[in-house]
Amino acid sequence: MARNQKDHYYRKAKEEGFRARSAYKLEQINGKFHLIRKGSRVVDLGAAPGGWLQVAKSISGGQVLGVDLAEIEPIPGVFTLVGDITDPQTTDRIMEVLGGEADVVISDAAPNLTGIWDVDHSRSIDLARSALAMAKQILKPGGNFLVKVFQGDMFIEYLNEVRREFGLVRSHSPDASRKESAEIYIIGKKRLTAPVRSGEVYDVEITSEGSSGDGIAMIQGFAVIVKGTQAGDRVRVRIGQVKRNFAFASVLEK
Image 1 (cartoon, rainbow, N blue to C red):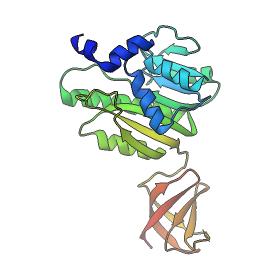
Image 2: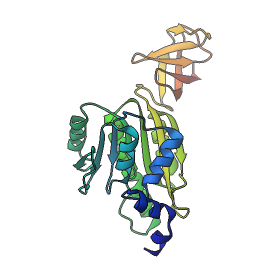
Image 3: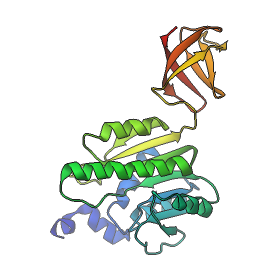
């Protein structure tokens, strides 16, 4: 409590009516990355006690839904569910409430801490993976994602998992995070719905050429641009950068 009483953001939250100092983390992250916009449909996973819900509602003004294992004290204009984000029934309930897909999925959830760093880091990554799995089910094409993780050995692996699903991915530590904290936030923008992912390998036939002269292969109706090829080539390629409507690939073997 002594630390909290001296904490600028803790006092500020009390004065301004936010339920948690973490509200300012979302304010700062959104101010920099513009994940939530006016009218965005937002789902907050692991939302208790509701500080992020208050901020999301203030920014969006639209549908905001919070999910947590614990019951959340009501917030005007915000719908809350008691549910487990790893349970498929929770996904169905979220989609039913929204009447469709979400524009933004956010999660500031943290695991129950043991004080054993390797265990806590692993649990944090597991929780973040559950949030990503949920986002892949309920997030619209082009939608945005924000999740908290603890830094550690598994961080880069998880960051790369997010990179495979979004067109733009960044990691960021807002000013409102405590300096001694190992938490960091991963931002994913422009949810990809392409049938290919970066790093995957395919055997393809180049069926046409683009205006730049590079070959184009179609994978499940999705255009993949392969530099240094021409129509009629059959090549093995590795997928590189994936955009919303097309991807780039490099030749591994002709």
